[in-house]
Image (cartoon, rainbow, N blue to C red):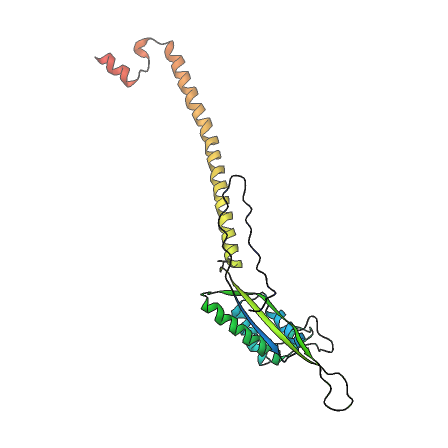
Length: 238
């Protein structure tokens, strides 16, 4: 089996004091590799750069369009003598159709391997292309100069990832508005309760003062003229 340059990073969990460390599940991966490719490793590297870190669905759509020259490949590094493309907003790029088709075949292979392993949703976590072998050759005609034959390789690794239920911008705004409304309602109800207490406080004070006045006036009256409670009235009748 070929040695891949990709080394999966082990997930670490830093537990707090007194907390049990849960079992960390490492994501499953699928691989594919092609060697001895008769194509420019520089073009292959730029094509790989355009789909690195993307999902398989995006890679298929993008490379299928690039294979028929609907989309251009951005050349970030190996761009000597390349022209600026309007499809890229004026950036340097081109249409390396041969390299695009090679990378597309490798991605199809890794997608088949992922399906075989039971991986539903996968993301390209590693994709590279580089020079492999150099065979000494001479130019076929004219002045005899060195014209070596170079081959390249492409390797792809995809990893399973959990599809997070990411909220859209509208959902986030709606959620934020709902939270703000709840907070405002709670604040307004609290203010209303405080105001009601403030309104009821003088009323209660007035009632208590009236009761005290009535009780103080009843003390100086004879017993038969006092305002008695219902219980006291029943006792007097008996």
